[in-house]
Image 1 (cartoon, one colour):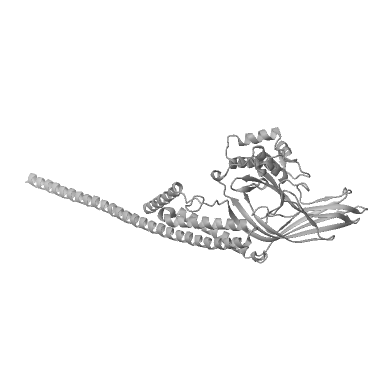
Image 2 (cartoon, helix red, strand yellow; image 1 turned 45 degrees about the horizontal axis):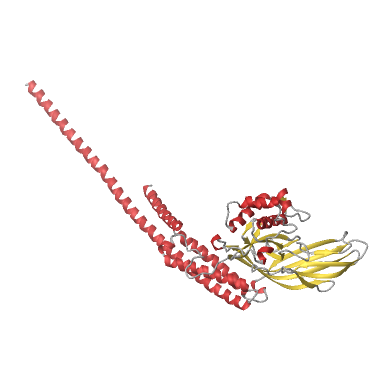
Length: 486
């Protein structure tokens, strides 16, 4: 019993000392590793390769022919490095579309003079091959640069829109209340997101309501969440914009409705994602695909638009399907597989480092821990650069992906070795503690065993002495009796 208590106390003292050291001396910050000045904007959580198909069907149940229809379908775009798409095929019964662009970078597949016979329907299909990355931004207030308020970007994305009433006095007052006392743009955006999540309760809407409606009625769907977030950001001088497209809950799914989320702009980081409907701030999975953003000119925020002079009886239906494919299915490129493998190894290396740090590796093997941290950071930077350059220069992106793969492998080796070495030290230390504890226990037990023997010996001596005295007294009495009898 005593032995177990001593061992447990010794072990807890050792673990507590290691934990205290990790708290006081945390692992090396990726942004402050000596010799690496690049900014790690985000970490990649996963890589997805798949096929996305959007089908739009316009039905004419009336008894007259529609001859003057006009259809617009926004094309999924590569606005950010979070996903890369290739439009592989566009099909319809009335031939290929023309493509229109607006000044905000939105592209639309356009069919004009669409005719639909009575009691007939027309189907349009757009097929994409997608390469997408789930990311989490590693934002740091100290790394955020100030806005250039004279820039076109700042002016464009801080102005009000029809459904983003960022100049409404009530909304401006609310935005100021939410962010009062905060000077950090990052913290302001975070507080605005938290407010929107708490304030708006999800309820599907049959039309676009806008930011003020969401603020006053405290309800809405993904559109109202996004409108309100963007409007509140703009009201306190944070550039923000709407993102329209598709979002899937799994990698193999068919949906019928589009989705809306938002982005806000941070100096040195660029456009940072926020999906308040899904409770996501500064992070986005690999199943969000943007088809329209900024301030659309040709059509309102929607997945498609069909205009004609006799559309009161027309009906429409949309389905969007996502299916995963093997990594080499993206035009036969090795880039997705390299990126995916690098992500896995980085995650494994970070997990190993967490275990190693918990075992006190930074205290025992400080230089080795620094090497492992630096290798993890470098591989993340290389992967970030590869993803950012994929659209503009695939050859350079491939080289960066190869470097990221090699460096992540080195990081995993360093981290795994740290776990092994730290574990060996910990086990050796525990064995030494146990041996010392056992020696102490043995000595203690020996001392305890000697004390009862001494007491027993003393007792025996007392008994012997008492016996002698008793015999002496008896002999004395006998002698006295004899003398008396004489």
